[in-house]
Length: 381
Length: 187
Image (tube, rainbow over all chains, first blue to last red; front, side, top):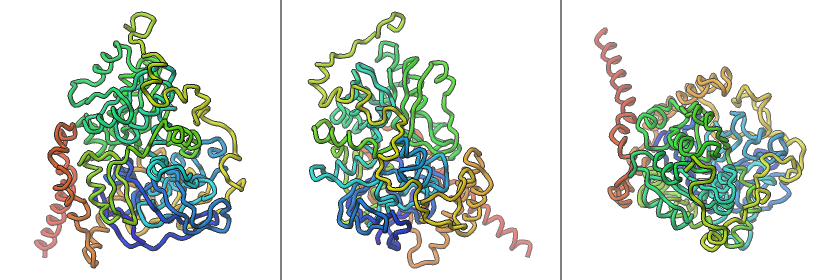
């Protein structure tokens, strides 16, 4: 089969790889119809996530058709069209039994802090991902769901991670009616978090980014008030002034490891890998939220320590919540929202790329060219 | 002002927001939010028809975190350990827990060693690494390279990126040249 493979930092190409095999009785093999590049794939692409091996196939956002199933699979059969959550999870371990599907203890031999994720290095279990023609899907009776007839492919794809993670991020903010919510980052997860904040009753949603085209999307897609931090000397002071010097009630970090805006942080984290990520956005969140406020972290960070302003968080009495989204737990409610016309996650997609052009796709997304917000890979194109 | 009890800025009314934002307040009640409460004991909710999953196998060659009691029921088999990078990674997994910086820094070192080795090995194949096609840089002219970059804060560090990315390679090359010269001069 054809698959995207990692060749080292900033280098990917398409190669012929052996087809994936059923390796466990509850495995399925899925023929990928659409896959997406996620902002967190860029951390792998930039060589930031430890134990990303040459030959690895990325891609944890994908939908497709079941090609084959293992002997214990009961709910799927070849031919079914499925959406696959980015988390791999067993369904019955201590954590899965409590709904913490992203923290499954049965799928990642390489780490206990992180569950299993498709195409996200051996730190996340060593599973090849969906930017390929075929992919192995473990625990097929637990993770995937048959795509409802009425749901568009684009909406289904965005629910496998990006939109669902943003929605989950808004929940972690514990938004109360009328709250002011500030979202750092207007990438797909930030857009989804901003849009979802309204569902939870926010009174005001402010989105901060440095890319005008993404801020325009935040106004159109998420009905948000937007500010370009590159045009302001100090984003914390800006946010204090915007909120009557109180600060926001809730801050959502939808940026993560490669936050721009501070040169030394960029060098020590993104380039020298001496931090688990550049915590610029997280520190801005800590500084700009009000005392007693809530911080939700949706941005992906690496496992190493980061220079986070923990003392300020302590002194302000903040509540910090974070996790990888337990995607499938969110789906029934999100399906209702889509069917009721409250959200259309597929509207975040801006570019479609054939699998053969994946290197150009990564370069475009990484360098933020051509107003790219969410690129989608079409393996059959 | 925050110096008095009330919020300094009053939000628009619920009716006003409901008229302007599709679906406003649909999840206003935390009970409608799927992750509330955070933990909810319901082992039957996932579709799993086992109490403990069948094991994929117990491959003794497969690395694992020493924080795990045993190899997990399911594990990835994407890129097994091999060569020098494999030895570094195996040591990182066998010796250090995830709580130790050495664990992660050794894994990053393993990544760089493997990338260097894979690049050199590729030069002896019919498809050597090609930095022109594999970095996707050929797409630049089609993607509005100048207009797309105008006004961005990442321009502030753009100058230093090539130094930090190419610098170690140049430095490594210089060390190799110096070592070779030393060997030849001695002879």
